[in-house]
Image (cartoon, rainbow, N blue to C red; front, side):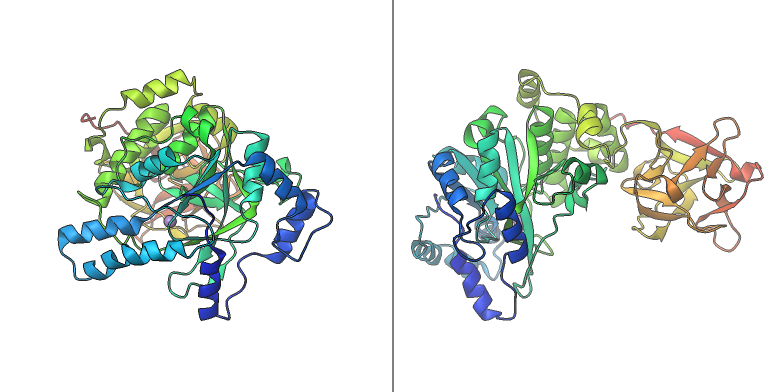
Length: 489
Ligand SMILES: [Mn+2]
């Protein structure tokens, strides 16, 4: 199991698609070596420098890279379901895989699970069989670029409680074209507890004094690619083995790292390619939603304190999902004396989609018509809707935050013209067109920039609210109500 991803795989791909660029951005690589103090670069881009080689000798006795093959799981799953391409897939993963890895320059050991176990338990098994000081997890559909590893190891050597991710470059699942990933996005999550990329905020640029070769502190990791000191991995409780297949484990380990005294970084000098798929090629036993909801409930219950309500309220029905026994994970949090989730929001992720302070979390109801603001499952850059109140949360959940935004998940109500329309845009945390003043006596919601008031639906379009000059009539009065959680828990 010791080895690096083979650059040879890249070369094979590139020879098939000769117009695709080299994997590493030469400019960035050079900049990174130089700022690491390297002056006498041995060769052109990519060759490990004397500095990093010295560091490798010192820091790494042995490196374990664990790749989890989702496709192994697919084979078993398809056997169960008797699908047509089962033979092709299973054969490819038997002898041909063994033969292929034997051709690689470094020893590679293939370990198979006895039954379909999911990513989390497969990784735990891989970790238990590994012997190196640093464990690197990579999805099976990854390719490393020259010089990807040293910048990761350097951070762990400085502080073993630093967990590091490379920049994830994009490999097209249609053409295998290789595109550099951005160093200007970092990991976050929305109310539904989906991992999402968001722009690196100004405060993090300022902390690094504008030096983009320095690692970015990221609130969460995407999950497929990271390196961690093996003792530290044990110390903070590896993974939650009560989670199935995959989903949520990346947020769980991210919250745990930060709340329990570690640091999570994206090391911008390290690039690894990853094939982003459009759809999951295998099924989840019992349905994708069931598994992911169970895993998300486990992480919400153990790590998120009262902020779990954002997840529960926007995902009606999730509270009926059984999440099993979490006593050992709660005991772990206790033992490690981890900080509360509010600390994480305050100190690590102040631009979080979940507001640290808020006035209300629930429906916003018009006094005259008794209708409620409703995102109608519309997306970013569309108009917010208005509809009969159903009291079930979901699309009618809005939070009026201490920053005076009206938010639904990671979208904020935004008005950029007199008389509307009221759009849903990504929250930018800069007030501006997303600043609303709620008057708790008059019950009005004033859009501060335009000095106009949120009003009921207009005659032209009965499905969207309007903004008009403030008249303080009943159609401009709104009740901000906290939704209560369902009884079944
Ligand atoms: Mn992946």
